[in-house]
Length: 408
Ligand SMILES: Nc1ncnc2c1ncn2[C@@H]1O[C@H](COP(=O)(O)OP(=O)(O)OP(=O)(O)O)[C@@H](O)[C@H]1O
Ligand SMILES: [Mg+2]
Image (tube, rainbow, N blue to C red):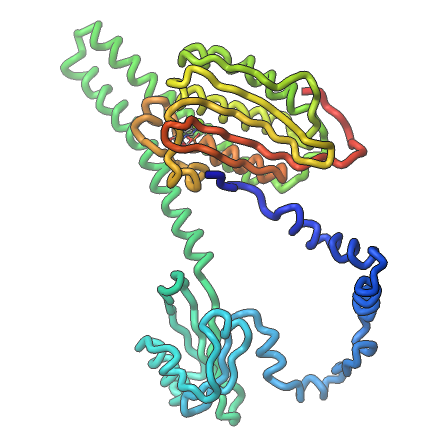
């Protein structure tokens, strides 16, 4: 199974966004292209037969439904009997289309919604709001506002503000703090325990003292590593997004990383086989950040794939117009498919115990993901139980005229 973990738009989507596709069609010279070109060019409202509403008086008489249709949040207009007179496109998309004059109470059966509508119709309140959640087909949370329109129209508006994304971010933040403090509390509790033992029962036992001090040192190192990783992530998030403007040879860069990882590989009984070749492959990037990416991938392959005794690193680019791909493949136990989409989440570990014994914090791949996103690059993972793991980094091709070339 291949899962795209990182990266925003596909090349096609990016080209559509930049207007390249439209330009390509309109320049193709076919009759359709000429007609499309003429239409696109007719961009003044007068040419399209539109009337301009500019005077203040015109604004006062602007039909309310024009405004309602322009609102991107779901919106209904209803009367004093609670019948829906109008729903905008966003409302139809979110809650399904409604037949004319359907009762709001039938459309939304939640008691709190009935109460909200009653309160505003009875004139108890001019404008009032509640939180409302939909569970099917997907869970969504809304802030719903009901307001009277004007003083004597007999009309009311119901507006939905989607809060699902804000809620999700709040939940992630809370999870993150819980995870980070849990990760720090475990080694801290163990250090505190050993200090107590050293001051008490083990006070006069030099052998136990050495042993305990060693464990304490390991635990404090683990805390330091966790804090380094957290700082590294937060630095990446804080840095203003800056497109890398230096081109570097990723083949040379990865060769350097392999050399620096040889000792970890041999500690784990793994051989790193380079199939990188000698052809330089240029990518736009920050070398320190890319070193961090490949260190993380190689370290994981050494730690979790050691039973395969071999890691193969390769790189390729089909043509200068194609993406540059760098692959780190191990032949260890692999990753069960259901875990693959989640392994770049912070603190996510397939097997917490194995990762802990390998001194992992579960942050490595989320750092990799952050860095690659900043490079317009993405990570894909192919793996399955017993099949080893293949991590592939895909870099976009670099434009033909380099801004500067840096040898890694
Ligand atoms: N090559 C691999 N083979 C098998 N499992 C892997 C491999 N690479 C990563 N994993 C799994 O993905 C999880 C997340 O990896 P990640 O690098 O984010 O964290 P970590 O290695 O546990 O900690 P850190 O990198 O912060 O020291 C790992 O705990 C492991 O379960
Ligand atoms: Mg790791």
